[in-house]
Length: 485
Image 1 (spheres, one colour):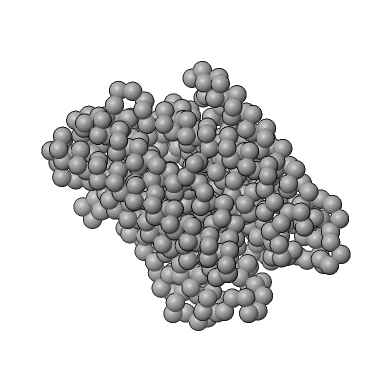
Image 2: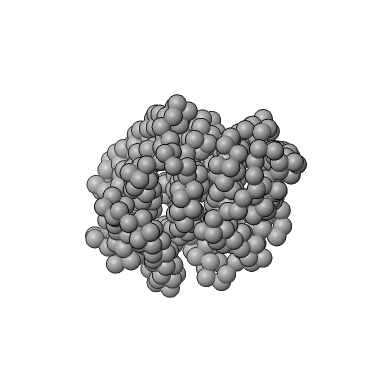
């Protein structure tokens, strides 16, 4: 029942968006449904932590600790993106967005969330592929929402590159199925079935299948060098969608990769899959950190920061030890919150200054004091300064890397962090401080926006001080699944 409701609620919200004309009532229903989804996710996490994985409809839907971790990530970020959307759309200038277009925005928003939840709650790897493809189709409309030249170009680029990537992932999935049928003697693409016969699979065919899947889903995750769609899409999408793309969509693709990593690791005696992730992660970190120095567009700067943080997460998983995997999972959640905070505040700034160009934005602290403070909080959080939660997850991954004697990779990691620190401090510091342009008048943020800022900031501080015991249990169980324990 929990699984069915989790999937049904965003679908219901999408239907309401098309038929309800009372915007206030629609906003209340939306927030109620998403708060209920978060509560259901917590209930599901509790059930799984004390019992076994939950399975319904003859394993059509299946949730274990790993999938429910990503369900909590999706429902948490989606809820705050939805609340932020209310204030964001209300302050959109008359004529910029019609009532019908706002309805379509909410419709595709809910379908986007629905498809991400389905991806994490299906057992069949073919269904997982379909759900990931659905996220592309739903979010393409949201990337090109403003329907101007740059947003339409970004949407097409996003659609074409991610479709190529997802096709490559399909080839990998088909190869895996062929391997399973030929060498394990079962006709199933259910992940739980394949894991149980992983030792019987042909190793060479499995390696080829994994590489296809890694490149395919890695394109969707924004790993270098398949990342070229990401800066354009994140900078042109509406601000709440930029937060969803960065905060949860990239991690949903990493979730898909992890399901294949577990199969490969159970089948091969060497850490092939983890090693691929290790070097792909550090390569993404190094390249993205250099690109961040040269950015002028505030949302493109945050997009490259997302590539860098996806690299940190993949690098953490690639180390492969329990401590590193726990740190990578923790970093998934921390980055989602910090990046949502930064995208939301960047959205306020862009709307106020009517430009993305950071050379033309100064004095945000004077013009929008609340947003200015939030930018500083988000900047120090994403850099990894104490006491924010990202500091804890980065340190966990670094300690794990040193424990495995990856000294050269750790040095490259630290050098990249220093470049990121300099880049963000240089760009965002100039945006926040300085004298405001004479033509810009000071203003206050909407109450709903302030609430979102406060809650996300509190998360980053409180979880930087320590994990809740329940969260620790869930992370440990998800870590065990990835390690095949």
